[in-house]
Image: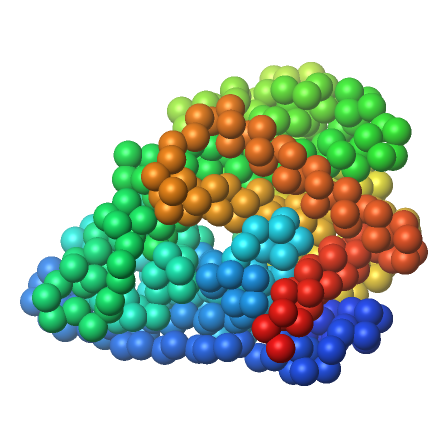
Length: 435
Ligand code: NAD
């Protein structure tokens, strides 16, 4: 999925080196962060429903664990490249440091189109992967989570097989953890399997808290603002819903098929219900090109990014704001809820236009923050209410946003560079204790 120009690993390393130079990061630590600690590639043979054997490839990149156990999602996708996974693992290292949770960074996946497998085959594939990873992961070693095309059900299978491996007489995995603690090997589980309340909303809600804090710093009233959200999945939908409840006018949302623009503002909940019922986001607003809402119209994803709004929220894919369209964006604030939605060239163009970018490593860190709460609840045999989770998340997002904002003002740098500075300084402080 990565082109040479926008190779995310190359891009992440350029940023690392630039910030390291700015803050005189210890060259030994820089060298450590320039390559992952460990890359695991493993073959995964399974018996298909028709009796044939098919072998898939799975991998796990453990980037760095100075701050705590490696932490990062697992994606099932036919076109994932190793450079992309390495970059995502690196970003996890940085993200955990920015939001100040005691985790390092990792990422993994299987090269597979999950839609081409039956449920039984997908479960078998997950079991084999879990068996192969059993000695490399663990609540105190490396903690996977859902990512693209994986979900709480798949996480449940991963835990099930991991527990079986650990408890088997022949197991080479030794642990003194209790049954409940063993569940902390994975986060993003179903609530009845040890998942945390509030995890589903966490990334969108965390982004909302970060945005509210920035608006307060800027002296802007949310009720005077308009927002467009690209991507109406887990992250985009919840973000839009929390904006709406706060009185921010949500004028546009989109999914992979289409977008909808309603100048008077739309109700995200109602829009989602219409999408479910009629199969289209524009289901409640348009029939073909005829729209029955005042000023409502069907738009493309490209149009959405260029709308005259105060806040733009890319919450779908990487590399959507590029050198080609950055100059056409009108928003004064961009909240990056997707990972890596703005290319390096576009970042420069946006800075020249004085567009404030709230960077992904801060804006979407609410997800890993609540993953940490899930891990903590499993490890300490606790169950927190959703209200408790949201209260802690708000505090943690506000503190992280404040740290980043302060460094940005002190050093006269962008919020993105400030977030990297906060993260690398935290990692360096912990690293110094080990050396
Ligand atoms: P999701 O699969 O639930 O939703 C993705 C959305 O993007 C869907 O609405 C889909 O229709 C839309 N989409 C797909 N292709 C598109 C295209 N070409 N143009 C516009 N929209 C398109 O995924 P998600 O969990 O909401 O993740 C969205 C982004 O947020 C990803 O970049 C992910 O890495 C990042 N993220 C997610 C979490 C999390 O907790 N889920 C945490 C941190 C970062």
